[in-house]
Length: 301
Image (cartoon, rainbow, N blue to C red; front, side, top):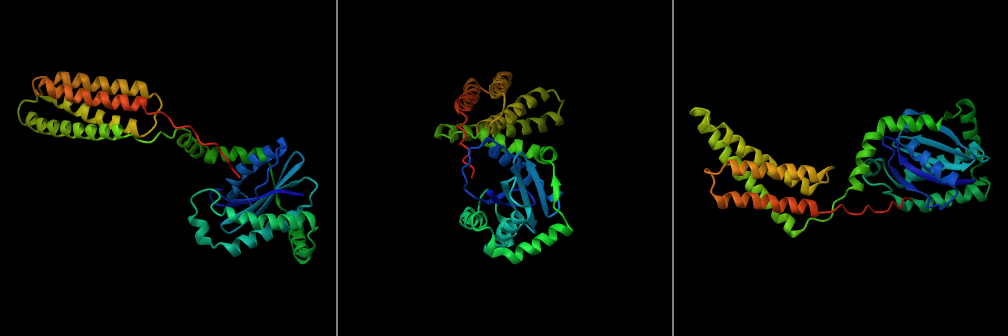
């Protein structure tokens, strides 16, 4: 029996459509995970392949941009499984052109194709594949002349980890640490930070030109202007994007702004210094109070 089927993009394993089957069997769920890992490295294998996972089998058939994959009971004939995958591939290629497949950017972009998957799957499961007799003989001969590659799932997972591990980690981090929406006060802190940073940069550049033309004695003041300039934009970054160790980074940047502005007493009056420190305080408060949004549950098909 065919338990599950999906269509993926070959070059990156992006799932395009899948059957909405709800099996709670632990072996099946583990097999689904192995199938996902295998789908990411299909470019390393020939167009047909088979893998074993306990009492289940994974079969795949790739052609051009897409590959059809299925999970079947271990006793289900491989010839019938590949007949099913080839018919599925033909149905998908008829419904969607290569351009739409290439432009797909989100998982399950063609989820409506599930209706076709279910119809074909039911026909193969409950009608003994009678309507595909000619195709059966053709596939049987092709498999006899060129048997499908036998894939070891452990090796596929290892390759998948080496090839895609960094990208998957990055994507997982991005989704797991999505920040809460930006508030009106947060936008105000960003605007004020950018303004303070621009003021520090302008004063620092002008002072640098004067110092280099004279005696270089004002280099400390130049640094005291440029450090808060960098700190202001780093505070903006920390507010907009999640970063590990936010508290420590915010503390270091806030102290840098305070120390540098205190050092500039004389070039800035007390009110100017308090303004810059106040903006840094507001920005630090907004960063530390903007929480990480809860990760949405993975309702994969």
